[in-house]
Every structure is written in structure tokens, then in C-alpha cells.
Image 1 (tube, helix red, strand yellow):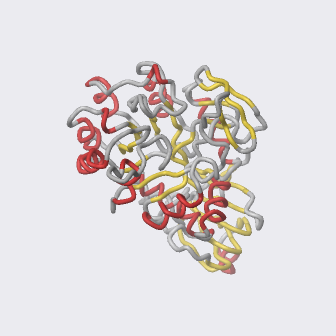
Image 2: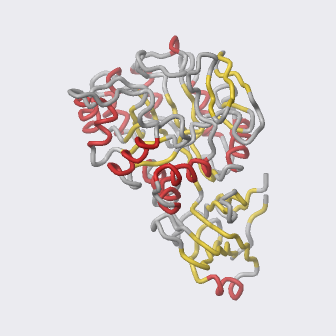
Image 3: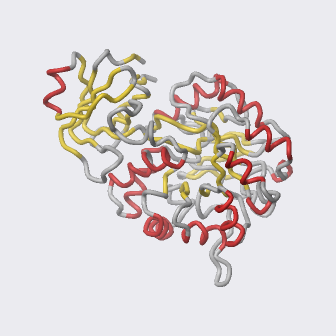
Length: 382
């Protein structure tokens, strides 16, 4: 990897800025000190910059808020700083510039090790931590180890409230005690509902207390029924809750992708990968907390066919969201950049190619394959 010169430019034949769904033609992003100085006509770049990198397509650096592993490793297996380096490199092959390493349900308070690893990490692109569990519904465990699912207690609330890095916490609101969601939200934790059997009224109350969104919409959560809208219905009915969604063609039917996008818009619905260790590798099998997981035909499942995360990169999520919904490439890119940045409260720093923002870009070839990733002004060469 190498740092761009004092004043450098990324010149793109087509530039998606993360704000508009339409591309701009022949534009250049000027970068200095890891920040975006300006976005100008492409012809101006050689006149003011010694170094100009040209690419067919430039987009804001993709942001993945649910990344369990990549490069052959899982964060749960080795919650260490070195693991984050491997995951970041594997995810960059699929266009991810920034991410939340995701630590799923595990024994007791093993999540503390994940918090410590992220706090100590200097890996480019790590923007916080996603804890998915263990405070989930026993009725909706998915692939999570059911024997490790438990309720929040006072010590958990204190530890999570003092997390030294930006924290997204997925929990089942119906399993939380009165006031716990509000305490976490006031401490700055981004609380999401997931692996939950909550009813509509419970989600409404949790939203009033500070709930911000839902994790992998439609999956491992209460569904819409005639007299109980469930968590899915509550999210679709809300004007504020956001949600991640897995656009791999297996987790969510294309009709439901279209329904969610039509109801929520790209301002609230964002793309996640929920990727596991095979991302960026040729691995066909791996262990997930004692369970053997198989990679077959674009799916990750255990021996019983239960989905275990996704075999998906961010650029694949973008392309498939566009293909399955007809939303357009610009909209799908916004769902992979600006919207997740807003979901984490980081849209003042990331998510769009705007003056003053951190210089994060995903560079694409004409066929939408990933040509490179720039993280805070550094072009990553893995």
C-alpha cells in the first residue's frame, strides 16, 4: 500500500458521489492529508496534482456494518488485532473500505475481548464493533449457539455503555429489562433489534427508548401476520428505523427486497454482507463455534441446511440489489455507503464524496469488478 502524494486525485470516467443516484461524468476527487479537498472536472486534475490515478468508476468507500470474517478467519475464533488485519484485506477484495467487525453470540462475556481488540486496532477501515448477541431470543437463534444466548444484566449494561469504540449492538428488545435499551442508547450505543420474536408494540416502545434499527431485515425475526405485524412490520411502518439487508438472493426473496426498498427508501435500508471466513478465499468448509459450515452454490449452511451468514461481498451485494430490484446502480451504491454511514452516525465523516470527508473510495472497472480501495487517502494494495 502507499499513501497518495500531498495533493493527489482519483479521476473517474463515472463518479457516484453517494448523494445522487446519477453518475457524474469525468470528475476528479482531490485528496490531501487523508481528506477530500474538492471534487472537480476531470480535466483540471493534471493541472493541479502531480499524481492522478484514473479509474472507470469511483464510488464512496463501501461500508459493511455486519462482517463476521474474511480471508480465512472469523473474528469470534480469534478476537485479536491481527485477525482484523486479515479480515480487512479479505473484505477489500470485494470493495469494502470501512467495516464493523462482527462478534456473534459466544460464551459469557467473551465479547470483552472483541471490544479490546477493536480498541487496540490500527487496521485501516475499522470504524467500530458490532456485537450480534448474546442477548437474543431463544426462539430465534438462527445459527447462533443457543446455549450461549442469555439476558442482559447490570454488568453487561455497564460494560457496553463504556465501550471505547463506536458500538452497534443487536439484541432482542423483548428480552431486555425495562430501561436497559434507553440506558444503552443514552450512552451512545446504536441499538438494533435482531434475532427477536418481539411484537409490534414492543418495537414501538423500544424505538421510543432509543432503538435505531434492525439487523438483517426479514431474517431471524417475527414476521407480518394478520393481527400482529411483528418486527418486520414495525420496521416497515416506522418512519425512522433503519435496517441492514442481505441481498444475496437466498436470505431475502427479491419481492421482499423490493417491498422493503419501496417502503423504507435507500435513506433507511442499507446493504450488509454478513460474510464469514470464506470471503476473499477459495475455502469450501469452515468451523463456526463448533458447527461445520459448507459453502455450496453461493450459500453457507450447516449440515441441516440452516443459513450461516452469507457468501457475499459488498460489490456483489450492490450488483445483486440492482439486478433483483431494478433500483439502479447509484441507489445500490448509496445503500452501501451513505446509508450505513448515517446508520452509525458517521455520515459527517464517511459515506459520500464530499469536501472535508475522509478520503474513502471504492474503485471499479467497467464490468463492476473491484479495481482498488482507498481508505483515508491510502490506496490499499493487498
